[in-house]
Image 1 (spheres, rainbow, N blue to C red):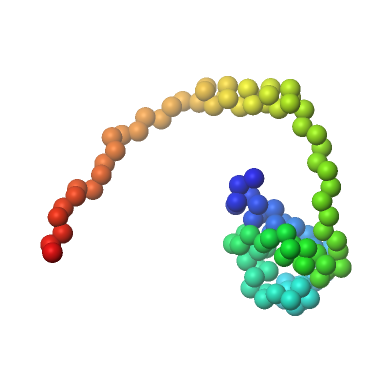
Image 2: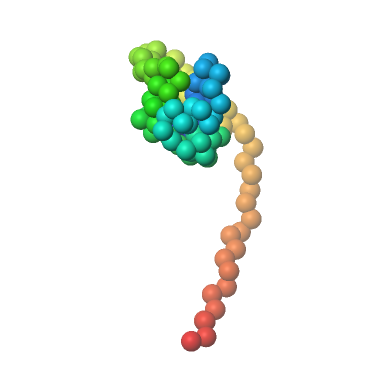
Length: 110
């Protein structure tokens, strides 16, 4: 999972905690013992909370953060999907790039 996507997922989780509990950011932050600005940054995807911070926020809302087993991945199906994605990528038109331009190197006075 990319970092931006992870921040988005964490923000969605925090919003869900607040929605379920009816708490404002400031109250959730106070109960979790962290600044409201930090909770806001987590919720808006500007910062990535650690698992401990997410657990503190869930607990502050009277919820429990648990991990459960994911559905097993079918390797044959995953292979077919990958093949389809690669076929699609190859069918896209290639965009030619112009020559690379570099700034001129000049001697600095000194």
